Amino acid sequence: MPIVLNGSTGVITGIPVGGLPDGIVDTDMLANNAVTSAKATGIGGGKILQVVRGTQATNYTQNSSTYADLNLSATITPQTNSKVLAFLDIQVQKSGVNYHGGFGVKLVRTPSGGSATAVYTSPTSTEIYDYHGSAGGEVFDREKFPWNLYDSSPNGNGSTAITYKVQVSTYTSSGGATMSFHHSGTSSITLIEVSA
Image (cartoon, helix red, strand yellow):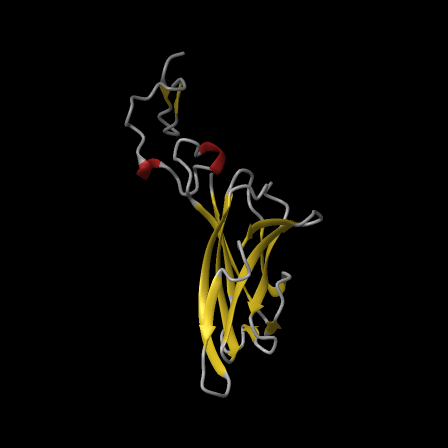
């Protein structure tokens, strides 16, 4: 088929697929948003697709090695084959005298209408561990602890919302000692979807 330039419209016809020389089309010639995710297979993965964040609304106090909800969660709708990074920032206040104590976390993934799956579970209830000693009175210690977690198989499909929630378990050597989460600061969870 011959190449034809229409002098009235400026349209060129007759160029076959692959008929342009290499390098003739550069980035500046592409329209904004012209390359869709489906066509970007050669660009490589690792692109950030979306970011969502959740915060803990109310204070929560616990003294138990059984995992319980921290009232901290965030919901994301990931695409097929993407991954999810979860960044936790846990604010905790430990109170008591002359005791050993610590806490662990569990990250639970639940798709809308589906069942819950633990993405990460601390090896013990004392993954974060501390000792308090005092000559008398009560010890207060307000600190934030980060967790950087990775869900390699969120099983997203681009339309199903998936909720990630945080649970905690605690340990103290004294029955009167407690762990208070949120208290004077705000715990948070940040979810980042990354393309495969």
